[in-house]
Image (cartoon, rainbow, N blue to C red; front, side):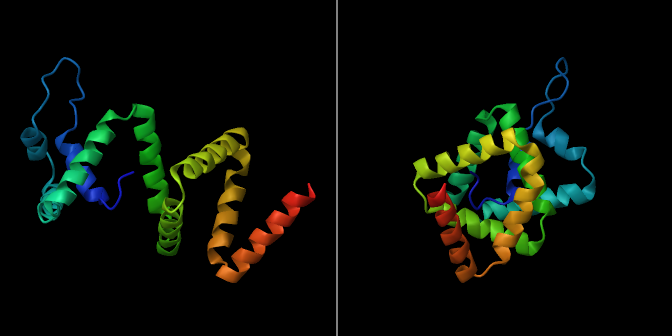
Length: 164
């Protein structure tokens, strides 16, 4: 959903647009929230702001549009995305790269096919939460396979489906 936008730029955008926590208190301004941060966090946000300003106007517009979409998401969807990001950050660099490659492959599919696959996976995991770890291990094995091994596995799977 967020494309190439870095998590840091998103952090700046979210920080600036973050609502106040207290219902009765007036919402602190972005400047007030910024002043309360420790120096290292202030510098990190400044660096991300410089990164954002260095983007082309088109890229900045894309980031702003993504932020607008983010703000319109229901809270449970935002939490799901945050959870996914936390899980992604726990992966090894090799696993992250493999995920990025899989995402590139998925982008090549039609929107209908992607939606179908996404729905099937969510339904499966909802029905079988105990199989999540097995699925993750299978995904790790798949990533370690060569293209030839993957093709052989696909063919075996097709044969099994035909035999059913």
